[in-house]
Length: 283
Image (cartoon, rainbow, N blue to C red; front, side, top):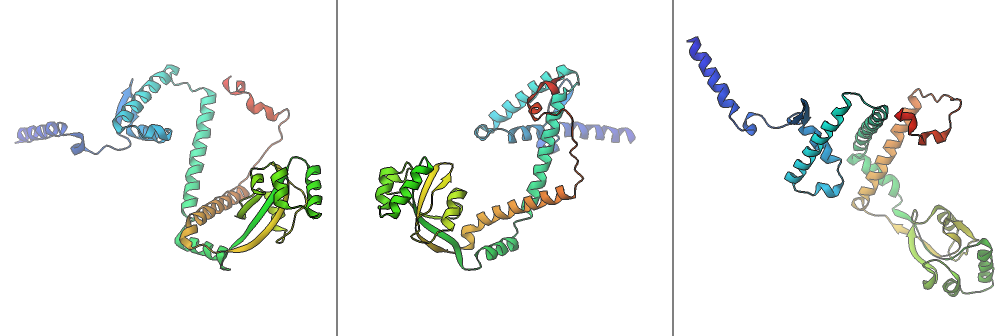
């Protein structure tokens, strides 16, 4: 009887080994897809290799990409085995940096995911648009020139009665010059900070003193300012989600660094330019 049972068990095992893989067990992250001199390459390795590819390569057919990634991992494994287990110091440092960045990014993802619940979004919308308007909008024109002296001269001419649009067409170096310097309507955040700060301090009809930005010197005419209608919740949902995520990450980072014991010792002879010296990590 025992011999018969042993035979049946053996037959069952043989039958199981002939079953397709999908019947035996579904492939998972630790499924070995290849080995090189006994070193295993898993399906998980392939998944992460694909994840880190540029987007254009991810569009390739699955079979083509599977074979290409597997070939690459096999070749890389064979090459790195030539070091016989020795890991250069610069590689260790790179791996530590990459691991640190990936783990930090994972925490950031968790923080952001917890920051955008429906109640939090509704509360953010109410805080931002509780007055029923969407903030100030401005209709302005400007004349852009290269020097402060030229801008001051134009300001004096305008105060003496020169027409702004005509002067802009003749003198402005900006792309809006041919249209009389007109910039149309814009909201806060649309202009560089120096330009926006000047406009915020103006009333309709005012002409500014020369304002310097990265583009040159501006003389600004504020034609009109108004309150825009508040957008609907759905219109700004994405914007609110981004704001909440950004704030949540900043708050968490600030809290963690405030609580952490952080030491930055004074190091004699340390020159900031040393971070360019790859020789220090290749020795």
